[in-house]
Length: 311
Ligand code: NAP
Image 1 (cartoon, rainbow, N blue to C red):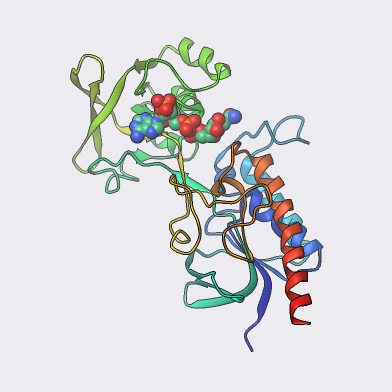
Image 2: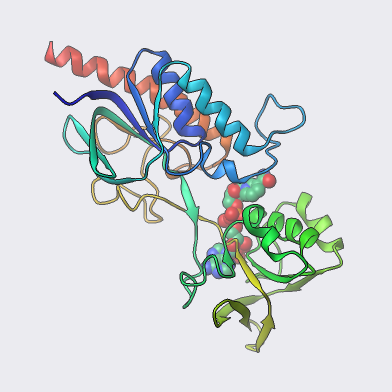
């Protein structure tokens, strides 16, 4: 007979691996699917200063690996594979990855969020040929070149700062006349000599042949259209939940987040949602980790109830 895990966790970020640690340490057979590196989005952040316990801060990739190893110490299995299909509505859940289907009594969805796209023609085609969603990963490809950063939040500000140290010039394009980014980012940003600010501006068009050559932007106040030459475009306009795979079976908010309160319980029995994919106010590493611990508690409770029903 096929193995039936107590719990399968989809996503190996801080929410997923904290859930895995608590579940396995509580004696549950636990399998984690992670499509990239352990740590999820956190693995792309070179310096994490707001996770407690690290007086000098910590590299997000290293923290992700440590979370994985900490969970595996208690018997958690990890598969480095992307989940392609799920069946969550029955008592025994089915998770497909590659050619194989895995079964479990509970599922914890910890798939996180991915970058929001601009939705412009050529964006997908030029990803990797000038379009990037991660300055920390791709910045070095644009050494001494000119790049545009789109957005006005913390990510855009942090990206513009990283890139200003690598590139010859950074053009920051924001749709309003003030940044959403916290003040701590603003002073170094405004004092960097190689950052040009395009306020109240929306990118209308990506200019490219085989690679990105520039952007066409529209000033929303004056209506003026202008072209800016650049070699790369870093899109930093926020994130979207990675809920595509689940949303036909489970309740999601209008923004696509899986509806779950502080208990992490979703609209489906035996299915829990943790971290950035869940409806919540504060999306941080530490709140994702807290969700992971909470979900394990309610997984245990759910499994005990199921056993009592059967028994
Ligand atoms: P965010 O805070 O949602 O900011 C997104 C930015 O993109 C906003 O400035 C928004 O403009 C703009 N935007 C959204 N859609 C757009 C579109 N279609 N076209 C053009 N511009 C668009 O996202 P984020 O900066 O990725 O941050 C996400 C979360 O991570 C936040 O909670 C943030 O605080 C956190 N974070 C924290 C740190 C840290 O160091 N503590 C670092 C990075 C991220 P408007 O301002 O006009 O809405």
